[in-house]
Image 1: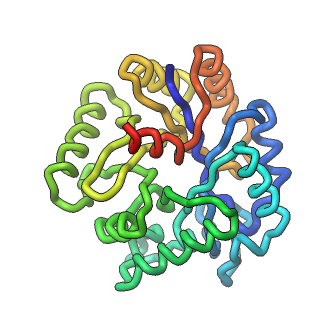
Image 2: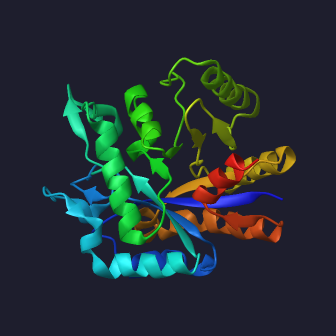
Length: 271
């Protein structure tokens, strides 16, 4: 039996409840893991949430009372999960190259900043935030160290260039990830154990057949499967997501069990 989690990135101050409800209406009983941006800035790029465009003042997600009350209600009924998605999700340009937040942030007190927003989100939702998601899935070695020091696990992509502290456990996890990528042509879908935290990749959607391929690998190897989506992209490009929803129904019909990102980490830690 494969346990499947859906990680939906970019929930923020500008998010409308009706958009979320509408995109998931065909799987409304599936508990989505929402990666929430604490204080969103202008994250507009060629492929980003358009509602944030032009926003130059950090907007605290808690100031959207309709959204936060809905999320809190759903959390109490165990219908969703909340993760922390960066701090502002802001990008910086340098030499005509765009750098995501957890790559350019190098301040000495980054651990304290991450911990502070983790605690604020936990208090806002009355829910223990235990997972960090980096904007664009990219994070520096210093950044991941600060995330781990904040007692957070990480959902993102382990880069080919490693970008992790050089320890035996970290190297072993990295080699496992590389081996699966080379021989199976998919990102390692299970939880990876590092010296001071856990990591879980959420695969991107590359068509129905690709998702089925990952699912069958997980089923064969007794591993969970996490999928990364964005509610605003599903809202704006609905036709592109038919393969995704077709796959979810296929997986459920095949006996898959819906779960959340936080729950997958919790279950692994309890083994």
